Image (tube, rainbow, N blue to C red; front, side):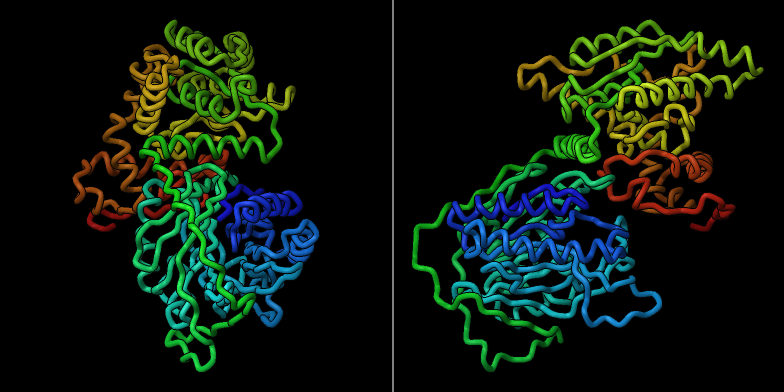
Length: 579
Protein backbone atom coordinates (compact mmCIF):
# COMPACT_ATOMS: atom_id res chain seq x y z
CA UNK A 1 0.00 0.00 0.00
CA UNK A 2 1.48 3.32 -1.15
CA UNK A 3 0.40 6.03 1.26
CA UNK A 4 1.33 9.07 -0.83
CA UNK A 5 0.68 12.81 -1.16
CA UNK A 6 -0.63 13.81 -4.62
CA UNK A 7 -1.44 17.34 -5.77
CA UNK A 8 -4.74 18.22 -7.44
CA UNK A 9 -4.24 18.84 -11.15
CA UNK A 10 -0.61 17.72 -11.29
CA UNK A 11 -1.22 14.63 -13.40
CA UNK A 12 2.38 14.29 -14.55
CA UNK A 13 3.79 14.71 -11.04
CA UNK A 14 1.24 12.34 -9.52
CA UNK A 15 2.00 9.66 -12.12
CA UNK A 16 5.67 10.09 -11.30
CA UNK A 17 4.83 9.36 -7.64
CA UNK A 18 3.02 6.18 -8.73
CA UNK A 19 6.00 4.99 -10.77
CA UNK A 20 8.41 5.71 -7.92
CA UNK A 21 6.39 3.81 -5.34
CA UNK A 22 5.57 0.99 -7.76
CA UNK A 23 9.31 0.52 -8.23
CA UNK A 24 9.81 0.41 -4.46
CA UNK A 25 7.00 -2.13 -4.18
CA UNK A 26 8.52 -4.30 -6.90
CA UNK A 27 11.92 -4.16 -5.23
CA UNK A 28 10.28 -5.25 -1.97
CA UNK A 29 8.82 -8.29 -3.73
CA UNK A 30 5.19 -7.16 -3.69
CA UNK A 31 2.62 -9.07 -5.76
CA UNK A 32 0.15 -6.14 -5.80
CA UNK A 33 0.61 -2.37 -5.36
CA UNK A 34 -2.36 -0.16 -4.48
CA UNK A 35 -2.62 3.62 -4.33
CA UNK A 36 -5.20 6.03 -2.86
CA UNK A 37 -8.45 7.29 -4.33
CA UNK A 38 -7.95 9.58 -7.36
CA UNK A 39 -4.19 9.57 -6.90
CA UNK A 40 -3.66 10.39 -10.58
CA UNK A 41 -5.66 13.65 -10.41
CA UNK A 42 -5.33 14.48 -6.74
CA UNK A 43 -8.39 14.68 -4.50
CA UNK A 44 -10.88 16.25 -4.26
CA UNK A 45 -11.06 17.69 -7.76
CA UNK A 46 -14.42 19.38 -7.11
CA UNK A 47 -15.83 21.02 -10.27
CA UNK A 48 -12.71 20.21 -12.27
CA UNK A 49 -14.54 16.90 -12.76
CA UNK A 50 -17.04 18.74 -14.95
CA UNK A 51 -14.38 19.93 -17.43
CA UNK A 52 -14.23 17.56 -20.37
CA UNK A 53 -10.58 18.44 -21.03
CA UNK A 54 -9.59 17.48 -17.49
CA UNK A 55 -11.46 14.18 -17.61
CA UNK A 56 -9.88 13.28 -20.94
CA UNK A 57 -6.44 14.22 -19.63
CA UNK A 58 -6.97 11.95 -16.63
CA UNK A 59 -8.01 9.02 -18.80
CA UNK A 60 -5.04 9.48 -21.11
CA UNK A 61 -2.70 9.86 -18.11
CA UNK A 62 -3.78 6.45 -16.82
CA UNK A 63 -3.18 4.85 -20.23
CA UNK A 64 0.21 6.52 -20.41
CA UNK A 65 1.00 5.41 -16.86
CA UNK A 66 0.34 1.78 -17.79
CA UNK A 67 2.72 2.09 -20.74
CA UNK A 68 5.35 3.85 -18.63
CA UNK A 69 5.26 1.13 -15.96
CA UNK A 70 5.80 -1.47 -18.68
CA UNK A 71 8.61 0.52 -20.28
CA UNK A 72 10.38 0.82 -16.93
CA UNK A 73 10.23 -2.90 -16.26
CA UNK A 74 7.33 -2.73 -13.83
CA UNK A 75 4.58 -4.05 -16.08
CA UNK A 76 4.51 -7.44 -14.35
CA UNK A 77 3.38 -5.85 -11.07
CA UNK A 78 -0.38 -5.21 -10.93
CA UNK A 79 -0.87 -1.58 -9.87
CA UNK A 80 -4.24 -0.17 -8.75
CA UNK A 81 -4.74 3.62 -8.93
CA UNK A 82 -7.63 6.02 -8.52
CA UNK A 83 -8.45 8.46 -11.33
CA UNK A 84 -11.17 10.53 -12.99
CA UNK A 85 -13.03 8.54 -15.61
CA UNK A 86 -16.16 9.12 -17.70
CA UNK A 87 -19.11 6.80 -18.00
CA UNK A 88 -19.49 5.62 -21.58
CA UNK A 89 -23.17 4.71 -21.30
CA UNK A 90 -24.66 7.34 -18.96
CA UNK A 91 -27.25 9.26 -20.96
CA UNK A 92 -27.12 13.06 -20.59
CA UNK A 93 -30.03 14.43 -18.60
CA UNK A 94 -30.95 17.45 -16.52
CA UNK A 95 -29.45 17.23 -13.03
CA UNK A 96 -26.70 14.79 -13.99
CA UNK A 97 -23.09 16.07 -13.98
CA UNK A 98 -22.01 17.16 -17.45
CA UNK A 99 -19.94 14.52 -19.22
CA UNK A 100 -20.88 11.79 -16.71
CA UNK A 101 -17.56 11.92 -14.80
CA UNK A 102 -16.78 9.07 -12.41
CA UNK A 103 -14.58 8.64 -9.38
CA UNK A 104 -12.91 5.47 -10.61
CA UNK A 105 -10.12 2.97 -10.11
CA UNK A 106 -7.96 1.25 -12.69
CA UNK A 107 -5.81 -1.86 -12.47
CA UNK A 108 -2.71 -1.56 -14.65
CA UNK A 109 -0.79 -4.64 -15.78
CA UNK A 110 1.40 -5.57 -18.72
CA UNK A 111 1.31 -2.06 -20.17
CA UNK A 112 -2.50 -1.99 -20.32
CA UNK A 113 -5.49 -0.80 -18.33
CA UNK A 114 -6.97 -4.19 -17.46
CA UNK A 115 -9.82 -3.25 -15.10
CA UNK A 116 -11.87 -0.07 -14.61
CA UNK A 117 -14.59 0.41 -12.00
CA UNK A 118 -16.34 3.41 -10.44
CA UNK A 119 -17.39 4.35 -6.92
CA UNK A 120 -21.00 3.47 -6.08
CA UNK A 121 -21.81 5.58 -3.03
CA UNK A 122 -21.23 9.29 -3.72
CA UNK A 123 -21.10 11.18 -0.42
CA UNK A 124 -23.11 14.37 -0.26
CA UNK A 125 -22.60 15.47 3.35
CA UNK A 126 -20.03 17.40 5.35
CA UNK A 127 -17.17 18.43 3.07
CA UNK A 128 -18.26 16.16 0.20
CA UNK A 129 -20.14 17.17 -2.96
CA UNK A 130 -19.59 14.02 -4.98
CA UNK A 131 -23.22 13.65 -6.04
CA UNK A 132 -22.73 17.01 -7.76
CA UNK A 133 -19.54 15.94 -9.51
CA UNK A 134 -19.86 12.24 -10.39
CA UNK A 135 -22.21 9.54 -11.60
CA UNK A 136 -22.15 6.24 -9.69
CA UNK A 137 -20.69 2.90 -10.69
CA UNK A 138 -22.68 -0.33 -10.88
CA UNK A 139 -20.24 -3.24 -10.63
CA UNK A 140 -17.88 -4.93 -8.21
CA UNK A 141 -14.60 -5.94 -9.90
CA UNK A 142 -13.05 -9.16 -8.60
CA UNK A 143 -9.56 -9.86 -9.93
CA UNK A 144 -7.94 -13.28 -9.69
CA UNK A 145 -4.28 -12.75 -8.83
CA UNK A 146 -2.04 -15.77 -8.18
CA UNK A 147 -5.16 -17.81 -7.57
CA UNK A 148 -6.61 -15.39 -5.00
CA UNK A 149 -9.76 -13.38 -5.70
CA UNK A 150 -9.28 -9.71 -4.87
CA UNK A 151 -12.27 -7.32 -4.74
CA UNK A 152 -11.70 -3.59 -5.35
CA UNK A 153 -13.83 -0.69 -4.04
CA UNK A 154 -13.46 3.03 -3.32
CA UNK A 155 -13.73 4.86 0.03
CA UNK A 156 -17.42 5.66 0.71
CA UNK A 157 -18.42 2.22 -0.56
CA UNK A 158 -16.86 0.94 2.66
CA UNK A 159 -18.63 3.41 4.94
CA UNK A 160 -22.17 2.86 3.65
CA UNK A 161 -24.27 -0.24 4.18
CA UNK A 162 -25.05 -2.25 1.06
CA UNK A 163 -23.46 -1.59 -2.30
CA UNK A 164 -20.39 -3.40 -3.60
CA UNK A 165 -18.93 -4.26 -0.18
CA UNK A 166 -22.07 -6.25 0.58
CA UNK A 167 -21.33 -8.40 -2.48
CA UNK A 168 -17.77 -9.29 -1.48
CA UNK A 169 -18.82 -12.34 0.54
CA UNK A 170 -21.08 -13.46 -2.34
CA UNK A 171 -18.13 -13.12 -4.68
CA UNK A 172 -15.97 -15.35 -2.50
CA UNK A 173 -13.11 -12.86 -2.46
CA UNK A 174 -10.21 -13.52 -0.14
CA UNK A 175 -9.07 -9.89 -0.03
CA UNK A 176 -10.99 -6.61 -0.18
CA UNK A 177 -8.87 -3.62 -1.26
CA UNK A 178 -10.24 -0.14 -0.54
CA UNK A 179 -8.80 3.01 -2.15
CA UNK A 180 -9.38 6.07 0.03
CA UNK A 181 -9.20 9.84 0.17
CA UNK A 182 -10.45 10.03 3.76
CA UNK A 183 -9.90 13.46 5.37
CA UNK A 184 -8.66 13.85 8.91
CA UNK A 185 -10.95 14.64 11.84
CA UNK A 186 -10.23 14.27 15.53
CA UNK A 187 -10.75 10.68 16.73
CA UNK A 188 -11.53 9.42 13.23
CA UNK A 189 -8.69 6.88 13.31
CA UNK A 190 -10.46 4.88 16.04
CA UNK A 191 -13.71 4.92 14.07
CA UNK A 192 -11.86 3.95 10.89
CA UNK A 193 -10.25 0.86 12.44
CA UNK A 194 -13.53 -0.31 13.94
CA UNK A 195 -15.27 0.09 10.57
CA UNK A 196 -12.58 -1.92 8.75
CA UNK A 197 -12.79 -4.69 11.33
CA UNK A 198 -16.58 -4.86 11.02
CA UNK A 199 -16.56 -4.86 7.21
CA UNK A 200 -13.85 -7.56 7.09
CA UNK A 201 -15.96 -9.83 9.29
CA UNK A 202 -19.06 -9.10 7.20
CA UNK A 203 -17.20 -9.85 3.96
CA UNK A 204 -15.33 -12.85 5.32
CA UNK A 205 -12.19 -11.43 3.73
CA UNK A 206 -9.00 -9.69 4.72
CA UNK A 207 -9.28 -5.95 4.16
CA UNK A 208 -6.57 -3.55 2.98
CA UNK A 209 -7.38 0.14 3.44
CA UNK A 210 -4.97 2.56 1.72
CA UNK A 211 -5.36 6.28 2.39
CA UNK A 212 -3.57 9.36 1.10
CA UNK A 213 -1.67 11.94 3.15
CA UNK A 214 -1.12 15.67 2.81
CA UNK A 215 -3.07 18.90 2.64
CA UNK A 216 -5.48 20.10 -0.03
CA UNK A 217 -6.94 23.54 0.69
CA UNK A 218 -8.99 23.02 3.89
CA UNK A 219 -8.68 19.25 3.96
CA UNK A 220 -5.86 17.29 5.55
CA UNK A 221 -5.35 13.58 4.86
CA UNK A 222 -3.69 11.61 7.63
CA UNK A 223 -2.77 8.33 5.95
CA UNK A 224 -3.32 5.71 8.68
CA UNK A 225 -3.50 2.94 6.06
CA UNK A 226 -4.21 -0.44 7.61
CA UNK A 227 -4.83 -4.14 7.02
CA UNK A 228 -7.04 -6.48 9.04
CA UNK A 229 -7.62 -10.18 8.50
CA UNK A 230 -11.02 -11.78 7.86
CA UNK A 231 -11.65 -11.94 11.61
CA UNK A 232 -10.86 -8.26 12.10
CA UNK A 233 -7.43 -8.67 13.70
CA UNK A 234 -5.09 -5.77 12.93
CA UNK A 235 -2.11 -7.00 10.88
CA UNK A 236 -0.44 -3.81 9.69
CA UNK A 237 -0.87 -0.06 10.06
CA UNK A 238 1.00 2.84 8.52
CA UNK A 239 2.09 6.07 10.21
CA UNK A 240 -0.05 9.18 10.45
CA UNK A 241 0.72 12.24 8.31
CA UNK A 242 3.73 10.62 6.61
CA UNK A 243 4.25 9.15 3.16
CA UNK A 244 5.19 5.48 3.32
CA UNK A 245 5.14 2.17 1.51
CA UNK A 246 3.47 -0.40 3.74
CA UNK A 247 4.45 -3.88 2.54
CA UNK A 248 2.56 -6.74 4.17
CA UNK A 249 2.42 -10.48 3.45
CA UNK A 250 -1.01 -12.08 3.79
CA UNK A 251 -2.09 -15.72 4.02
CA UNK A 252 -5.14 -15.81 1.72
CA UNK A 253 -7.44 -18.61 0.53
CA UNK A 254 -7.13 -19.96 -2.99
CA UNK A 255 -10.27 -19.03 -4.91
CA UNK A 256 -12.94 -21.54 -5.82
CA UNK A 257 -13.83 -22.08 -9.50
CA UNK A 258 -15.89 -19.17 -10.79
CA UNK A 259 -18.18 -21.36 -12.90
CA UNK A 260 -21.63 -21.85 -11.41
CA UNK A 261 -21.17 -19.17 -8.75
CA UNK A 262 -24.47 -18.13 -7.14
CA UNK A 263 -26.13 -14.85 -8.04
CA UNK A 264 -25.20 -12.34 -5.33
CA UNK A 265 -28.06 -11.63 -2.93
CA UNK A 266 -26.86 -8.02 -2.81
CA UNK A 267 -27.97 -7.49 -6.41
CA UNK A 268 -24.58 -6.03 -7.35
CA UNK A 269 -23.17 -7.17 -10.68
CA UNK A 270 -19.81 -8.85 -10.19
CA UNK A 271 -17.22 -8.50 -12.95
CA UNK A 272 -14.53 -11.17 -12.80
CA UNK A 273 -11.06 -10.77 -14.29
CA UNK A 274 -8.18 -13.23 -14.33
CA UNK A 275 -4.56 -12.10 -14.21
CA UNK A 276 -3.00 -15.33 -12.96
CA UNK A 277 -4.35 -18.65 -11.64
CA UNK A 278 -1.17 -20.22 -10.26
CA UNK A 279 -0.59 -19.55 -6.52
CA UNK A 280 2.80 -18.18 -5.50
CA UNK A 281 5.27 -20.63 -4.02
CA UNK A 282 5.45 -20.65 -0.24
CA UNK A 283 7.96 -18.26 1.31
CA UNK A 284 8.84 -16.77 4.69
CA UNK A 285 6.46 -13.83 5.26
CA UNK A 286 7.51 -10.42 6.51
CA UNK A 287 6.21 -9.58 9.98
CA UNK A 288 3.32 -7.11 9.95
CA UNK A 289 4.31 -3.53 10.76
CA UNK A 290 2.01 -1.57 13.09
CA UNK A 291 3.15 2.01 13.62
CA UNK A 292 2.38 3.62 17.00
CA UNK A 293 -0.51 6.06 17.18
CA UNK A 294 -0.04 9.73 17.99
CA UNK A 295 -1.80 10.97 21.10
CA UNK A 296 -4.75 13.32 20.62
CA UNK A 297 -2.96 16.67 20.78
CA UNK A 298 0.05 15.41 18.81
CA UNK A 299 -2.36 14.24 16.10
CA UNK A 300 -4.15 17.59 15.94
CA UNK A 301 -0.88 19.51 15.86
CA UNK A 302 0.47 17.28 13.09
CA UNK A 303 -2.68 17.99 11.06
CA UNK A 304 -2.21 21.76 11.41
CA UNK A 305 1.45 21.53 10.42
CA UNK A 306 0.67 19.26 7.46
CA UNK A 307 -2.12 21.50 6.19
CA UNK A 308 0.02 24.64 6.47
CA UNK A 309 3.09 23.05 4.88
CA UNK A 310 1.21 21.69 1.87
CA UNK A 311 -0.85 24.84 1.28
CA UNK A 312 2.37 26.85 1.10
CA UNK A 313 4.26 24.23 -0.92
CA UNK A 314 1.53 23.25 -3.37
CA UNK A 315 0.64 26.88 -4.09
CA UNK A 316 4.34 27.66 -4.67
CA UNK A 317 4.87 30.26 -1.96
CA UNK A 318 8.47 30.59 -0.86
CA UNK A 319 7.74 32.15 2.51
CA UNK A 320 5.06 33.36 4.91
CA UNK A 321 4.51 36.48 6.98
CA UNK A 322 2.31 37.10 10.02
CA UNK A 323 1.74 39.72 12.67
CA UNK A 324 3.28 38.76 16.01
CA UNK A 325 1.52 40.42 18.92
CA UNK A 326 2.93 38.55 21.89
CA UNK A 327 -0.42 36.84 22.40
CA UNK A 328 -1.14 33.13 22.32
CA UNK A 329 -2.82 32.95 18.89
CA UNK A 330 -0.01 34.53 16.90
CA UNK A 331 2.56 32.63 18.98
CA UNK A 332 0.99 29.27 18.13
CA UNK A 333 0.55 30.24 14.47
CA UNK A 334 4.20 31.21 14.20
CA UNK A 335 5.25 27.95 15.85
CA UNK A 336 3.15 25.89 13.45
CA UNK A 337 4.67 27.80 10.53
CA UNK A 338 8.22 27.17 11.77
CA UNK A 339 7.53 23.46 12.25
CA UNK A 340 5.99 23.31 8.77
CA UNK A 341 8.52 25.38 6.82
CA UNK A 342 11.60 26.09 8.93
CA UNK A 343 12.41 29.43 10.61
CA UNK A 344 14.22 30.83 7.58
CA UNK A 345 10.94 30.92 5.61
CA UNK A 346 8.87 32.52 8.39
CA UNK A 347 8.69 36.31 8.67
CA UNK A 348 7.02 38.08 11.58
CA UNK A 349 6.15 41.73 12.01
CA UNK A 350 5.82 43.33 15.43
CA UNK A 351 3.33 46.21 15.05
CA UNK A 352 2.97 47.96 18.41
CA UNK A 353 0.42 50.72 18.85
CA UNK A 354 -0.24 53.24 21.63
CA UNK A 355 -2.17 50.56 23.54
CA UNK A 356 0.36 47.73 23.24
CA UNK A 357 1.64 46.66 26.64
CA UNK A 358 5.33 46.36 27.35
CA UNK A 359 4.97 42.63 27.99
CA UNK A 360 3.32 42.06 24.60
CA UNK A 361 6.32 43.51 22.82
CA UNK A 362 8.79 41.65 25.04
CA UNK A 363 6.87 38.36 24.66
CA UNK A 364 6.96 38.71 20.86
CA UNK A 365 10.68 39.51 20.95
CA UNK A 366 11.28 36.48 23.17
CA UNK A 367 9.53 34.18 20.67
CA UNK A 368 11.69 35.57 17.86
CA UNK A 369 14.78 34.83 19.92
CA UNK A 370 13.66 31.29 20.75
CA UNK A 371 12.65 30.30 17.21
CA UNK A 372 15.04 32.26 15.03
CA UNK A 373 12.43 33.63 12.62
CA UNK A 374 12.97 36.74 10.51
CA UNK A 375 11.53 39.70 12.39
CA UNK A 376 10.99 43.41 11.92
CA UNK A 377 9.21 46.04 14.01
CA UNK A 378 6.95 48.64 12.42
CA UNK A 379 5.13 51.01 14.75
CA UNK A 380 1.59 51.56 13.50
CA UNK A 381 0.94 54.63 15.63
CA UNK A 382 1.93 57.20 12.97
CA UNK A 383 -0.22 55.45 10.36
CA UNK A 384 -3.23 55.43 12.68
CA UNK A 385 -2.61 59.11 13.50
CA UNK A 386 -2.65 59.94 9.79
CA UNK A 387 -6.03 58.24 9.34
CA UNK A 388 -7.48 59.95 12.39
CA UNK A 389 -6.24 63.33 11.15
CA UNK A 390 -8.09 62.77 7.87
CA UNK A 391 -11.34 61.28 9.24
CA UNK A 392 -13.00 61.88 12.60
CA UNK A 393 -13.65 58.51 14.27
CA UNK A 394 -14.01 57.11 17.78
CA UNK A 395 -15.15 54.02 19.67
CA UNK A 396 -15.24 50.75 17.78
CA UNK A 397 -14.28 52.38 14.50
CA UNK A 398 -11.07 53.68 16.09
CA UNK A 399 -10.29 50.24 17.56
CA UNK A 400 -10.85 48.53 14.22
CA UNK A 401 -8.70 51.09 12.41
CA UNK A 402 -5.62 49.81 14.25
CA UNK A 403 -6.38 46.25 13.13
CA UNK A 404 -6.95 47.39 9.56
CA UNK A 405 -3.69 49.32 9.43
CA UNK A 406 -1.89 46.17 10.56
CA UNK A 407 -3.71 44.07 7.97
CA UNK A 408 -2.85 46.58 5.24
CA UNK A 409 0.80 46.55 6.30
CA UNK A 410 1.02 42.75 6.14
CA UNK A 411 -0.68 42.59 2.75
CA UNK A 412 1.69 45.26 1.43
CA UNK A 413 4.69 43.22 2.56
CA UNK A 414 3.08 40.19 0.93
CA UNK A 415 2.79 42.04 -2.37
CA UNK A 416 6.32 43.39 -2.13
CA UNK A 417 8.12 40.19 -1.17
CA UNK A 418 5.80 37.38 -2.29
CA UNK A 419 5.06 36.14 1.23
CA UNK A 420 1.81 34.33 2.00
CA UNK A 421 0.06 36.13 4.87
CA UNK A 422 -0.96 33.78 7.67
CA UNK A 423 -4.05 34.87 9.58
CA UNK A 424 -3.86 34.17 13.31
CA UNK A 425 -7.52 34.06 14.40
CA UNK A 426 -9.02 31.05 16.19
CA UNK A 427 -12.40 29.36 15.83
CA UNK A 428 -13.92 31.03 18.88
CA UNK A 429 -13.22 34.48 17.42
CA UNK A 430 -14.43 33.41 14.01
CA UNK A 431 -17.65 32.04 15.50
CA UNK A 432 -18.52 35.16 17.46
CA UNK A 433 -17.32 37.71 14.91
CA UNK A 434 -14.56 38.85 17.28
CA UNK A 435 -12.32 39.93 14.42
CA UNK A 436 -11.97 42.88 12.07
CA UNK A 437 -12.71 42.57 8.39
CA UNK A 438 -9.67 43.61 6.33
CA UNK A 439 -7.71 43.74 9.58
CA UNK A 440 -6.76 40.71 11.61
CA UNK A 441 -8.93 38.61 9.28
CA UNK A 442 -6.84 39.58 6.23
CA UNK A 443 -4.58 36.92 4.79
CA UNK A 444 -4.22 33.88 2.59
CA UNK A 445 -4.28 30.96 5.04
CA UNK A 446 -5.45 30.53 8.62
CA UNK A 447 -3.62 27.68 10.43
CA UNK A 448 -5.73 27.76 13.63
CA UNK A 449 -9.06 28.64 12.03
CA UNK A 450 -10.65 25.38 13.22
CA UNK A 451 -9.19 25.42 16.76
CA UNK A 452 -11.30 26.72 19.65
CA UNK A 453 -9.45 29.14 21.93
CA UNK A 454 -9.27 26.50 24.66
CA UNK A 455 -7.63 24.13 22.17
CA UNK A 456 -5.13 26.85 21.25
CA UNK A 457 -3.97 26.89 24.87
CA UNK A 458 -3.86 23.09 25.02
CA UNK A 459 -1.80 22.86 21.83
CA UNK A 460 0.60 25.56 22.98
CA UNK A 461 1.21 23.82 26.30
CA UNK A 462 1.59 20.47 24.52
CA UNK A 463 4.13 21.91 22.06
CA UNK A 464 6.21 23.41 24.84
CA UNK A 465 6.07 20.16 26.82
CA UNK A 466 7.12 18.21 23.73
CA UNK A 467 10.10 20.50 23.27
CA UNK A 468 11.09 20.03 26.91
CA UNK A 469 10.75 16.26 26.54
CA UNK A 470 13.23 16.39 23.64
CA UNK A 471 15.65 18.61 25.54
CA UNK A 472 14.85 21.68 23.42
CA UNK A 473 13.93 25.23 24.37
CA UNK A 474 10.11 25.56 24.50
CA UNK A 475 9.18 27.67 21.46
CA UNK A 476 6.37 29.71 23.07
CA UNK A 477 7.11 32.13 25.93
CA UNK A 478 5.28 31.11 29.08
CA UNK A 479 3.82 34.58 29.51
CA UNK A 480 2.08 34.31 26.12
CA UNK A 481 0.28 31.24 27.46
CA UNK A 482 -0.52 32.38 30.99
CA UNK A 483 -1.57 36.02 30.56
CA UNK A 484 -5.25 36.95 29.99
CA UNK A 485 -5.99 37.32 26.27
CA UNK A 486 -6.52 40.81 24.88
CA UNK A 487 -6.80 42.47 21.49
CA UNK A 488 -5.10 45.56 23.00
CA UNK A 489 -7.11 48.02 20.95
CA UNK A 490 -8.02 50.24 23.94
CA UNK A 491 -6.55 50.82 27.41
CA UNK A 492 -6.77 47.79 29.71
CA UNK A 493 -8.87 45.78 27.26
CA UNK A 494 -9.44 42.05 27.91
CA UNK A 495 -11.36 39.51 25.80
CA UNK A 496 -13.58 38.82 28.83
CA UNK A 497 -14.86 42.42 28.65
CA UNK A 498 -17.13 41.36 25.81
CA UNK A 499 -16.94 37.55 25.83
CA UNK A 500 -17.60 34.97 28.56
CA UNK A 501 -14.77 32.79 29.83
CA UNK A 502 -13.54 30.68 26.94
CA UNK A 503 -14.19 27.38 28.75
CA UNK A 504 -17.89 28.32 28.97
CA UNK A 505 -18.02 29.94 25.53
CA UNK A 506 -16.29 27.11 23.65
CA UNK A 507 -18.52 24.44 25.17
CA UNK A 508 -21.59 26.37 24.05
CA UNK A 509 -20.15 27.12 20.60
CA UNK A 510 -19.22 23.49 20.06
CA UNK A 511 -22.80 22.44 20.79
CA UNK A 512 -24.31 25.13 18.57
CA UNK A 513 -21.84 25.03 15.66
CA UNK A 514 -20.52 21.50 15.93
CA UNK A 515 -23.76 19.59 16.42
CA UNK A 516 -26.44 22.13 15.38
CA UNK A 517 -28.28 22.08 18.70
CA UNK A 518 -31.06 24.66 18.72
CA UNK A 519 -31.89 27.13 21.47
CA UNK A 520 -34.12 24.85 23.52
CA UNK A 521 -31.67 21.97 23.20
CA UNK A 522 -28.76 24.18 24.29
CA UNK A 523 -30.63 25.30 27.39
CA UNK A 524 -31.65 21.70 28.12
CA UNK A 525 -27.98 20.73 27.84
CA UNK A 526 -27.22 23.03 30.77
CA UNK A 527 -26.15 26.27 29.08
CA UNK A 528 -27.37 29.55 30.58
CA UNK A 529 -30.44 30.73 28.66
CA UNK A 530 -29.38 34.40 28.47
CA UNK A 531 -25.91 33.41 27.29
CA UNK A 532 -27.41 31.06 24.70
CA UNK A 533 -29.48 33.91 23.25
CA UNK A 534 -26.49 36.23 23.18
CA UNK A 535 -24.11 33.74 21.60
CA UNK A 536 -26.61 32.63 18.96
CA UNK A 537 -27.04 36.28 17.95
CA UNK A 538 -23.28 36.77 17.76
CA UNK A 539 -22.69 33.62 15.70
CA UNK A 540 -25.54 34.23 13.28
CA UNK A 541 -24.67 37.90 12.80
CA UNK A 542 -21.04 37.08 11.92
CA UNK A 543 -21.79 34.82 8.96
CA UNK A 544 -20.80 37.52 6.46
CA UNK A 545 -17.39 37.81 8.09
CA UNK A 546 -16.74 34.08 7.91
CA UNK A 547 -17.48 34.07 4.18
CA UNK A 548 -14.57 36.47 3.71
CA UNK A 549 -12.12 34.59 5.92
CA UNK A 550 -9.20 32.66 4.39
CA UNK A 551 -9.15 28.85 4.32
CA UNK A 552 -7.52 26.84 7.08
CA UNK A 553 -6.99 23.17 7.94
CA UNK A 554 -10.07 21.25 9.01
CA UNK A 555 -9.54 19.27 12.22
CA UNK A 556 -13.06 19.09 13.69
CA UNK A 557 -16.21 17.27 12.68
CA UNK A 558 -17.66 20.59 11.52
CA UNK A 559 -15.47 23.45 10.45
CA UNK A 560 -16.34 26.90 9.19
CA UNK A 561 -16.00 26.52 5.44
CA UNK A 562 -16.85 23.39 3.50
CA UNK A 563 -18.78 21.81 6.38
CA UNK A 564 -21.19 24.53 7.47
CA UNK A 565 -23.21 26.46 4.89
CA UNK A 566 -25.76 28.99 6.12
CA UNK A 567 -27.30 32.03 4.44
CA UNK A 568 -25.80 35.42 5.19
CA UNK A 569 -29.13 37.20 4.82
CA UNK A 570 -31.15 35.39 7.46
CA UNK A 571 -33.84 36.64 9.87
CA UNK A 572 -34.63 33.26 11.41
CA UNK A 573 -34.38 33.14 15.19
CA UNK A 574 -35.95 30.18 16.98
CA UNK A 575 -38.61 31.30 19.48
CA UNK A 576 -38.21 30.17 23.07
CA UNK A 577 -39.18 26.52 23.36
CA UNK A 578 -38.28 25.68 19.77
CA UNK A 579 -35.02 24.25 18.47
